[in-house]
View 1 (cartoon, one colour):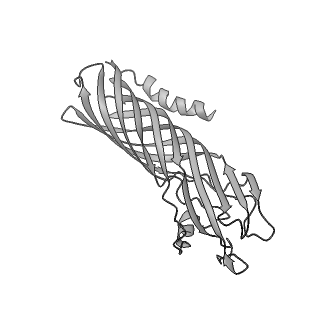
View 2: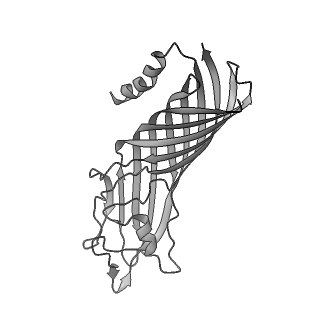
Length: 267
């Protein structure tokens, strides 16, 4: 039902405004999402990876790098009267797994956990991917015939998969492992600012090719998800929850380059 509503939101304004000039184009975008997944806050890491990085105080430990996602999107866009636009697409983003080595702490008190008076090093990793169906609408501003700017707001329905793992970095001291995966679906909002430059054809041609540069700001998270799929090996007394309750956070920036092929012009 939600998918049908997304498609209707794109098709309705196009087919109810047939009396005005309409252009149709297909766009392919490739880019990256910075700080993908934000801080990966969970019950076992309530301060997220930023907090875990603050615990790195030894030469043998290594902080988490900021997660990055590689994103691709196929989009169908309609331009109405050369001033308004509406678009629908499909996007897939795959995160580059971020890893770090840090000291095990009690997630409630924040105190370092020790075994035989020794700190416990942990190898941790986080990864995230998602598939989304975004729609948007906004205004088009034309400069010098060959250049257009798009500014618009939209929303997307997102299907996500996030994995958090923690394993002992010193099995002689204590051997443990914890793996928790969640796959929530939720709606996120976004603001798009996109530039478009004509590279093949003229503005009056029915068929032409343009170069696109996109900057997108996204807001949206799943909230806390309790039904994580788990795989654990935790000794008694270890301050880690077997089910690492967490959330997926898609808030952040996306930058992309792409091409648009215009294939239809009416009126």
